[in-house]
Length: 226
Image (cartoon, rainbow, N blue to C red; front, side):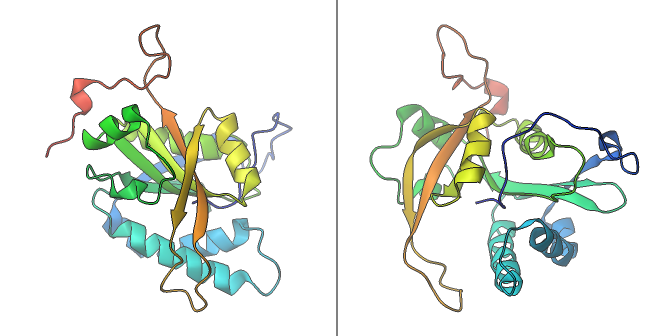
């Protein structure tokens, strides 16, 4: 799941104090990410659309999601920064066993199942971009770079069905909605909710050809070790 995002808009005049090209992207492993977790939580609060008085709950929920993701094998975080943090994206390889797709409504597409079993799917767990970041394409840059760094043949993400703006943003970047996923409520929450309904989105990174119009091909060099 991600912080609320919006489809890209035409670029306006950039703020001369912090030009978009000044942002640099830095990759962090799980140990490095742990050292900036509180700063990332602050970034999330500043980037979220939480109602007054709900910031603390949102911050704690972010920290729980982040802590769970950091424990995942292969976790990686990409940080955008200049003088301050402007955004981040983090994720992890989807386990070959397919457990990440647990709760999928119906039959998982065969191509997705095959790529999962071969270790070529990388999950984008969350993207956070500060609303005042001057690079209006930053969210897209972050997710594309994260997938490229991991030589993923397929990107995957889960977005709350109620979060239409974020879903629309991903679809505008070329992601495909393949169905719904039902997940149990967060057991660590102070007030567990009802089961969560999510949309499952995928982004093929391979070239679209006559043989592979969906772009769901993968190269042997991206094969993950068992």
